[in-house]
Length: 150
Image: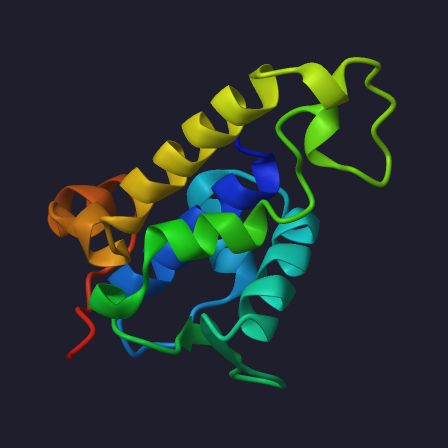
């Protein structure tokens, strides 16, 4: 299974925001830290705001911060939401599938079980689990660490 760049960027934005704590961070700041396109991040931040993961503040001095403490952000839920439109194989999308063997194929069940195991493992972890070495992450990203209080 391969995650989309969109999901990867969602995880990166969440990690960066968690390291910043209560401080508002900007799309430009995150784009610079990861050396990725700010225009790609705009869509990601909009999605994360709509899903309730980020609180955004518009205008001069605006930015974003986590809505919930990192310990409350379940990675399985986040990745499942970000990957909602990405089907693993054609037959997972009943509306658009043209698979000739779907009615008698056992591969669907095997792949579905594997996908659920993947999400199950992610669901055992929170955003906080990705931040066990905050000083090293902060140094790599050039951000001053401000932990989020519970």
